[in-house]
Length: 227
Image (cartoon, rainbow, N blue to C red; front, side, top):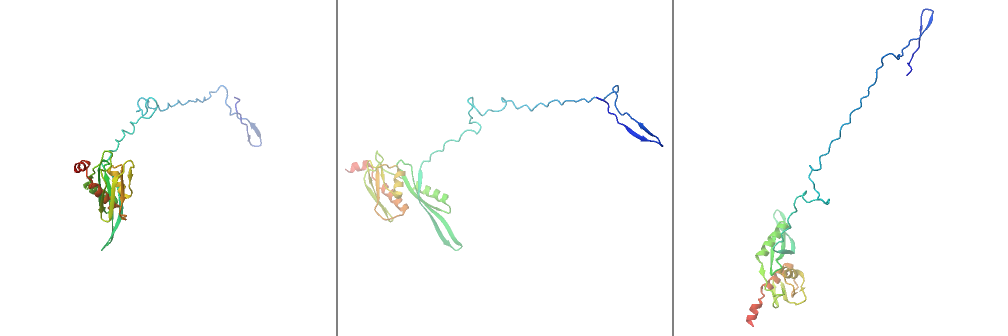
């Protein structure tokens, strides 16, 4: 590199002198060398070895079930099926105001010849249903059926204002409606027919009449002995 030189003029008493001051750097002088030190690269964080990490996939790449734990066992099927046939809200006027209760009537059965009707009352619906189910189990009856899950003979019964007739219907399935059909289905009957002989639209009373009629059935053995 060529040395850098600067020239400066100074004035004295009446004389002007051009003085050149050399501020340059000679070649024989020691120069300061700039040493550039390159920073050593910082090694990146080494990821944890795959062998140390738990594997949630099998050899085929599919996710295993062990991460979420074992599956829950299948729900145990209850012994009796139940179906609500009537749900009403009852209002009572007390000194402090109105009080609301719920009245539930349901049919419970195991579809193997046992069936019952129960009623329950409580301040909330779930408790009323629980009471009705306990009452239905208490009033459970066993129906005398034939081999093809029909009834041995025709029968009829009356409960309050409800009057129902039930008779065999071979090869036709269940021919019934209203809550009477619910009673026949939960009892496990398959080839029967029922008819309401009254104009009552009270589902709970119709169900009670159907259960009363099924209770009056005689077994095939007793009828054979009578003949």
